[in-house]
Length: 101
Image (tube, rainbow, N blue to C red; front, top):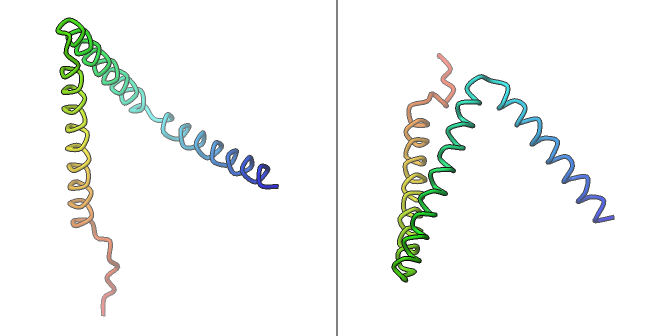
């Protein structure tokens, strides 16, 4: 009984996810976003590959570890900037309904 419920729930989540992806990729901008994300992924892989080769050449794992911490710092900074953006957007947006008297 529990396995069937989990299977049905999983199928519903998958169907909803595919519907969302179809909506996202129905616009022309989605191709630009997909190419940009692929380019970012390729550049990140290249940077980590270069750091890995440098760590092997120097015989020091600290090079790769430092690269990891710098990237983690950038990710944390991005999250903070995203929160600031959302807070600024919601402070300007007229979310409250004002009824005239």
